[in-house]
Amino acid sequence: MAADMVEQVSRWLVIIGALNWGLVGAVNFNLVNLIFGAVPVLEKIVYILVGLAALYEIYAVVKG
Image (cartoon, rainbow, N blue to C red; front, side, top):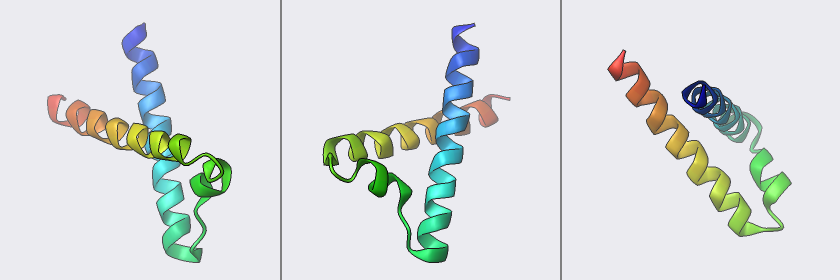
């Protein structure tokens, strides 16, 4: 059950990160910065969590 929750959170973080990068590339709009820009530490934490989620997803794909 806990593993399912980790997978769900990981997927959503990767989706949020991908959408954010898509917005940055397409229209130079950083949603994470807009939401958390006033608190740079929170913004950095979000980016770290997205990166860790991506690593977890890579592990899950390789593991099969």
